[in-house]
Length: 407
Image 1: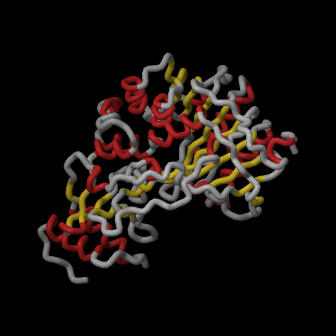
Image 2: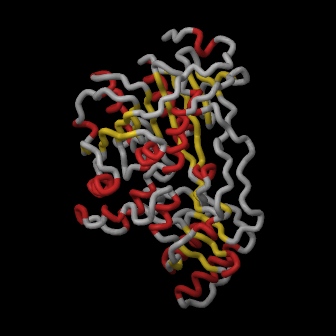
């Protein structure tokens, strides 16, 4: 196995081994609508090249993040130009619960291999940053992470990863994403794992609004107190769609406006508006773009960590158990994989309740959508908060004009 010397195996030094880097040059692959790049820019870094295949997303990037070049197909890119940072939020469709779960070798998620193709043919950047859904830590007992980290280790990269929750950065969206950082020169743990806030986030004990997936109901609900569940680019009913909110006091079920969804990702409202009309794309396409984006404050936090690396004490970390799902944080040195005890909440900010966050009018969940949810809920074995299903039934009766159905 590759020998990386004493950096990880010796007793930890109290000195930071990764020098601060105040202005990184970045190349962004699978850029989407620029969540990673905007966050990095907010932290003082700059992006010189973007790659994104969706024409609507390209229009958004050109409007908000002007760069010298925007390539449209990662498979057509040649050797990697010299850069400090390469970011790649590669497609998640084959790795998510709402997707096909085909795994890392699926048609979409398998595009991660293009990153290594370019690395092998060109320059090696100082840093690599991957982003994807946390289900990849469980699917196939973490097969996707095994493939990625083995490929990194084989090329002499030290790596660390961590699941980060958007709520930790003050936004009322329960959004968990995996960020995998690697370097051949420096210690990625000093960027990604060295700052923590162990106490879990505590939403208001008596919430006014409760978020859930109206597209679910059989196996999952995505329940979120005074926040919305993860904004998604797809769903189990085959369409990108807004989450629902149960307004408990008013016995209403509503969906949020796309402009508030953009704000829940840290963008300005109407950030994705330039996508409409491009290649006949309609308003609904904006939900896909927003759902696939990286939360801007999360990316900004990572960007700031490059400028403020800190010592990471690994003495209490333990080797990962082979054949088990991967933990929510860990690292590797080419000689093993280790579990980290850091939480998903590095900032520990109190997130603003969704009832106070929303700026734009909500819309009643349609009769068809509420009926579909009730039908799925009746088939499953989920337990629901007292009064919730009754409220959905009352809502359906009101918006459909039908008599209230019996329980």
